[in-house]
Length: 384
Image 1 (cartoon, rainbow, N blue to C red):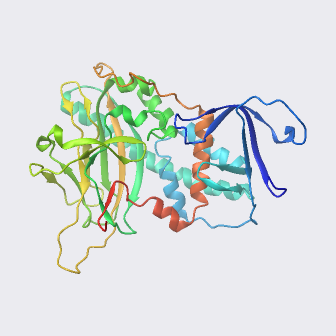
Image 2 (image 1 turned 45 degrees about the vertical axis):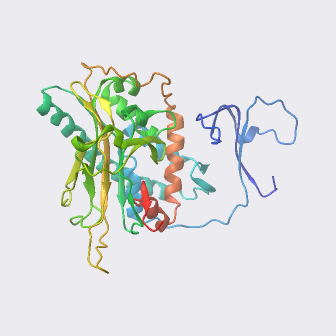
Image 3 (image 1 turned 60 degrees about the vertical axis):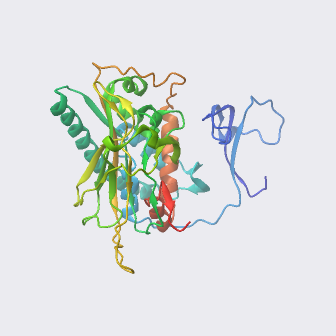
């Protein structure tokens, strides 16, 4: 360390957060406060330990954060319960210094009142987005009741915004999102921990118990733009044309064991001319239902064949919801957690991690922030 380096935190009796040995993210049972740091003298430490410090401090910089950027940050909290969301906002307002996953630099809050104005914008956006989530959940339960006559509970555990404003150099590989519904909730998986408390509150039980009673899991993909989608429309497969031999295990999405679809002449694909607010609702992952075994729905996008030099560059914008419907009177025969049971993070860990992620998004350059929301996952590069 150099004299110019800044100590951030010191912890003892630490443990690895995830089974991945290549990730050095640790939680510590015992943290030492700044005024009690014992630099310069010999002490006995309870291993393993974690020391965080910042190098090469930069002069303070003032960044004006666009309101749309703050609004989109709020969307990421749409599935977070109000209590946890309030704790995250208070953490942003109270902690004078912050660093962590997603933050390559030390961030100091110089004006607490300005941070309160910023967090108010984020909260109002989150509340508005959560109304969309609640409406989706209500519609899901009503849809299942109309279909089967059964009362259920529904929860949407993920919502995101995507766009193609930067263009797309490829097309999404045809895929099924996960090998089964429990894949979303495995340790270190794609399920956002900040959604945990709200999901368990709505379902009235821990997630690991609720998954035993999931009758259907689905995606809702909605045109969030002001115009009809004319380029790269989402397309879904008629699953009656899908043969089991056409799918294979693949890793087309981060932190998910998914399925990739091989091309077959027998496949039939469909799309709709989506108006603003229109969308698709399709079964996401393979799983056993009360009276039916679901294969999951392969989906992708396509380009229209156009005359040479003709383009349709209008960007695509979308909201995607991932939801599940639970009937406690039915229990799945599948042993979803035969080898592991997800260990829920503590609320303190959830708040700290979420606050760090939000701060990282706030200090991100506006262009980089919009690029982070660009719809470019699962791509096959057409130029390769």
